[in-house]
Image (cartoon, rainbow, N blue to C red; front, side, top):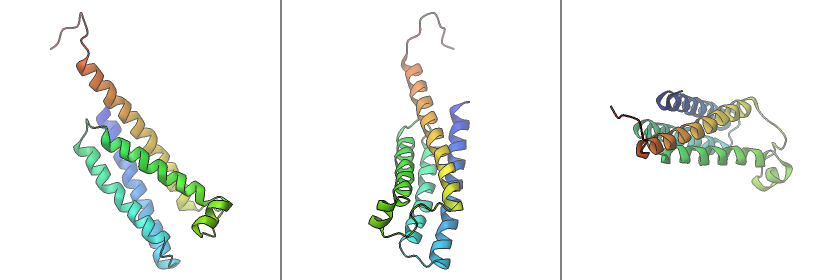
Length: 141
């Protein structure tokens, strides 16, 4: 798969993740009236958009991929911690052990974002290496 297609898939998954978080935001803010999780989900939903645009505008840069990988793994880790008894107590949440349907969907899509970003990062590094590699017996066209 070429890098352009791969970046398109990753950006699509990032937009899907953002959409899931917007739905989660509306549920937390308007149905549950949770003024901690609602704004957090809103920030996450919004944060994916400029990073996706950055990724599209800088196709040969590793930075947006690294930011995406680090941020997404951080969100997944925070989710995992809040689902343990100790994490739920520390964060004041009553959802220890509970995994909601939107939580599951977002984590599945986010794993796709991480895998795709790692793959795109490898492709970027590989292309940069091949550009600077002097390969004997190969004519440049």
